[in-house]
Length: 70
Image (spheres, rainbow, N blue to C red):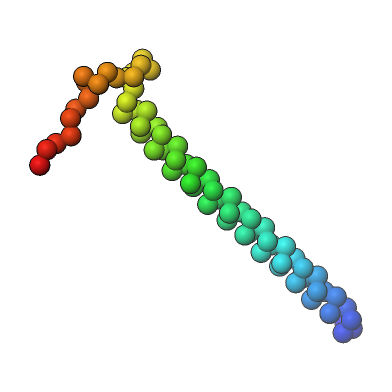
């Protein structure tokens, strides 16, 4: 194999690696954003489950349990 061919292959490999690194960085960003969205949705579901009854109506304040007093 000639030096030129080796150099071309090496450059091609570097290009592939750079592209893979860029893709990995982009995917990591997407996963991080999705994790934040999932956390937000979990908090919202918890809030809704806590404040609404099974028929979808807001529970009246009279049914609220007051916080404990220390």
